[in-house]
Structure formats: structure tokens, C-alpha cells
Length: 338
Image 1 (cartoon, one colour):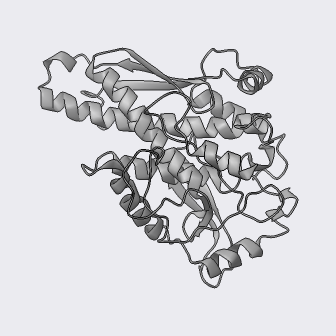
Image 2 (spheres, one colour):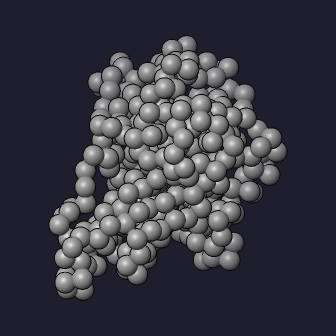
Image 3 (tube, rainbow, N blue to C red):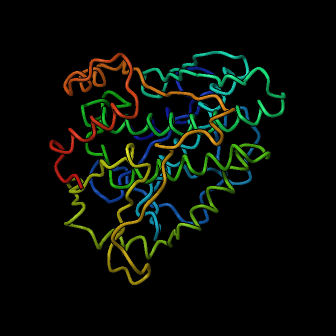
């Protein structure tokens, strides 16, 4: 079964050529069905946006699954980091193309079957701007709106997974919903993507370098320290039967995510909490000349529609505020929610 899942994850997304390939995450502790794996700092290989089939060999194979620990970001899931980065790129390309064509709307099929929408409004001075100024404004707006889209995609993924959705129908993913490594991974991933999309180098090369640099800045640790962190919270955050703590604070109202840090680590002094930025509550770099894109999701999966209806949300599309309301309501249902 694991071989089948890994093979399936190597293929491009169901939306067609151009979408990122899927990757399989792992829970940050050992146990049945956790597909537990440890990743090694500085040895994550060469990022690969799509399947390696038919493409040039990378200098070093991508490590697509495993868990890390960083002194200033807590536990991080490598698969979720890469997925957040790649879907930011995909949304950026879709939104940027629509803006260059002067469209007022863009949409694409997301990784879990729902549609992602952006309603675009141009400033009054748009047609009078020089071409180079328009291009800079488009890039700024496309990157920001893409970061928001990717973050909403993966936040909503956690919510519908809790409601019973599974990427592979025969395997329940409820145990991984709102893992204490997931929200922080998405926040770090979209931040890396913002740097990558401003880097003129080839995409996979840029991701490889920027991801390694950001993890180093966040204080990613070696295997020994990772295991110390993992074992220090056994019985408090996890048991071999599943997670005891889950993270529902996605920062959709505050623009900041709380990363949970393991206290008392000799190899990683400090502990408690750290704060990671997410792109909500802030506009484009220059609202007077940049297009504004309002991002929303259309929950087409049965789990998504059921969850939205259960929370009393009847809108056809869900924006960041709607998803924040869902998470706030779920806090009362999810055992171990911080």
C-alpha cells in the first residue's frame, strides 16, 4: 500500500500539466499509520516541482517526506513545506496571467477538488501607468494573493481532513488533521515562496537554496536534537496512538501564527512559543497602483460543503474570514486544541 501511495504522489496534480505534484506527509512522532520519517537538516536534496519522469536528473534527489525541528519554528513537515511553496507558485502564475490580460476574475482547481478564486480590481490609474510600473505592480499583487491562496488551500485542507476528507479514500487522515507541525509549515512555506518568486534563477534551484537558508535561519536542528524534542513531549503532545495536541491558530485574523516550541531542550534553549508571519491584514505594497485580488475557495468536496453548512456558512465561496470562523468553531470540537 505504501508503495502505491508513494508512486501516486510522484505524479502531477489532477488539474493537469502545470500543477504541482502531490507529496505525502508524516506525523511528527512514531506509531501505527503515522508514516513517520525524520528529515536531516541541510540534506533535503534538490526541490522538484513536478514528476521526475522525462526530466533532467537533479544534482541530488528531493527529500519529500519527513519531519524537522527548528528552534524558532517548532516541528515542521517537509511535504507541507514543499506543497505550500509549489501551490504559491502555481497560484502566482494563474493570477499573474489574468492580471496581465486585464481580467477581473481568475480561478483554478485546487489540490483537494475545490476551486480557488480571485476577484481582481484595478486602480483608477491602471491604464495610465507605464508598462514597467504595471509589471512590477502585477508581480507584487500576484505574489501576495498567491501566498494567501496557498495558505487558505492548506488551512482548509486541515479543516476538511478533520471532517473526514482523505486524499486517498481508503485511508483516514483524521489523525493528521491540524497537526502541531502543519500550520507552521504552511506559514514558513509561503514565506519561502515569496522569496523564490522574486529570484530570477530557475525555480527548483531557487527553492532549494531559499528553503535551506530559511530553515537555517529558523535554527533547524540535527537528528539527536530532533529526537530529544520529539521524546520530550511524548505523553503531552503525542502517544503512539495519535496526537494529544492539535494546532488551530492559523493567524487569519492577526497575520501571525504561533509556533509551538518544546521547552527545556538543552540543544535548543528557550521554548514556549514563536511568532511566524502570514499575509493577512496587509494590502499590496502600493495600493494606489497595484491590482487588488480578493481570494476565496469554493468547497466542492462533500466534506467541505458539509463542514461549511454545519458552521452556518451558506456562501458559495469561503474567504479568509469564513475559514477563520470555521477554525474558531472547531476549537470546541477538536480534542487537544491549543
